Image 1 (cartoon, rainbow, N blue to C red):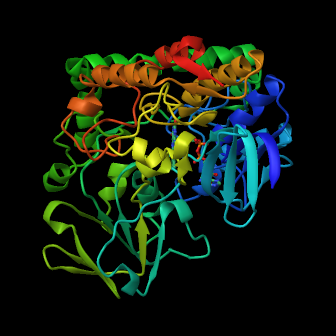
Image 2: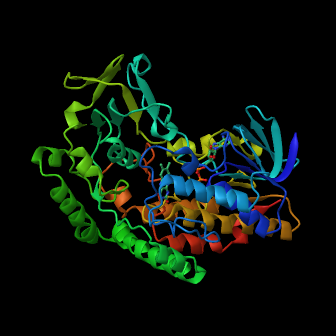
Image 3: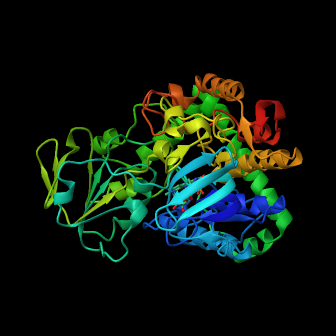
Length: 485
Ligand SMILES: Cc1cc2nc3c(=O)[nH]c(=O)nc-3n(C[C@H](O)[C@H](O)[C@H](O)COP(=O)(O)OP(=O)(O)OC[C@H]3O[C@@H](n4cnc5c(N)ncnc54)[C@H](O)[C@@H]3O)c2cc1C
């Protein structure tokens, strides 16, 4: 049994940011538990062709770790290099145990600490537990009939098999959301046939790609200039919330009209255009930014299967569609996303008096500041319920959560206490406020079913407002909302 003051689950930006912030408040006694054989999370794991961030990189980065980006939307390899730069700079490899898949966490109320079990690295004890397991970290493949019978290659975008040469092959991409939209144009030219299976069309908007030249990069190495660019990007993106939350008219004027213009300009075939036109309010599902997706879908070797041409079953040699056609295939790529509801914590968590987190979240996941739940002392969830943000950088939100977490830990220490826990009423008031603010948003009222919603229709992924509001809320620690023991 290993003992630390803080245990961190996961080594993506959430876990790395937690480690850096803990050091800032003088906590060196922490350990990061990572289930994979490498550190880094999202951008070290998602190596599929075309993987790229869709939030401008000067903003999609830790505020203390500005970087020499080569383009405004960094590709995966550069994001991986950035992640590794942070790991090295802060000496976080030495603080991490790899292949430590956490399978269960239990609160020991007598000792005031968490007992964390791993699959093969034994047990760990820690006073505080920070769960940074990433809501988009565990891939999901729907249970298609006959999937195991397929004799070709098949993998999820999250687990791209680089040993498989897709060039010249007959390939299916199932799913046309954020990852699918990046893979499709990246491989379309190189494959013999590409069959795209689309459940619902997404709104697509042009992406303002931009490569920095040598001079611009040199100028951006100046921290003040870089910060200024970051601030400008932040406020431009932030202004979008007005449309997401308050104005369908603005959404139509600025977003929908541009998206329709792109569709009309890039897709000349009316039948294909009809298949690609969504029937829900733009913004209800994540908007795809791409200049290359529609041209790829218009290629002669690419077929879009939509509506009645969906998947009936997978056969040993391909996919049988609902209209009875059989598509012969060598490779099936699942761009079918993640389960963000189950992924908020990736193992059972048992709090005070045997409280099960899964039970507390039975109806829908909920948390004070998207971070803490009553009954679970000293336990913090990064990118927890209602912390998602469609319009800006997830890292901004992660860093906001850190302010709250570090304040919880500091306040507990200052009082000479061992445990902090949010009160029932405080969590309830916060969650009620979140869902009442949510009513008017496009995610709730936009007429779509998305992964932002729980089974019972609560929007559990998104924060219903400006990201600076979330930062302000998390920055003002309210001792009377908490119990100390
Ligand atoms: C393909 C893709 C594209 C994205 N693009 C954007 C974007 O453009 N803009 C944006 O803002 N966000 C984007 N995101 C969201 C992105 O996940 C966040 O921006 C951010 O990287 C989340 O960091 P994290 O540390 O919370 O999670 P992750 O980076 O997912 O890290 C979680 C880590 O926890 C580990 N882990 C999980 N469970 C366990 C366990 N039981 N035991 C031990 N370790 C465990 C995982 O192996 C992983 O390394 C994207 C996500 C994906 C998947």
